[in-house]
Amino acid sequence: MCQLNCAPTDSLQLVTIMNVILSHAAEIALRTLGEEDRRKIYAWVDHLKRWEDDTFVQSRAQRLELPQADNVYVLKTSTDLRIFFVLEQDRIEVIDLARRDSLEIVRHAS
Image (cartoon, rainbow, N blue to C red; front, side, top):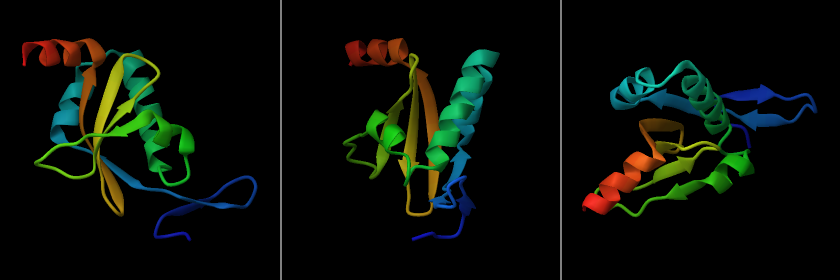
C-alpha cells in the first residue's frame, strides 16, 4: 500500500518513497569527504529513500542493538564508508557517517 510519497515506475508500479533527512552531524561528516565519496553517499541516500521496496539496501543494513535507542541501523556501502541511520515509520534520519577503519580504531580502544 502506498503512503504519502509515491512515485510511478516504468512498469506502472507504485514505489514508496521515504523522507530521508541528514542530521547536523551527518552533514558535517559529509563535508569532510571528497567529491567522489560524497557522490557515493548521495547515491546510497537515494537507495534509502526506497527502503520499503529495495531488498538490496535492506540486505546491506544491520540493526544495531543499542540500549539507548531503537531502530538504529548501519548501512554497509560498497566502499569503506558506513551510514548510520534511524528508521522511523515515515522517515529515515541519517545520523552519522564513518569509515570502516575509524570504527575499527574505536572498537580496539574500548
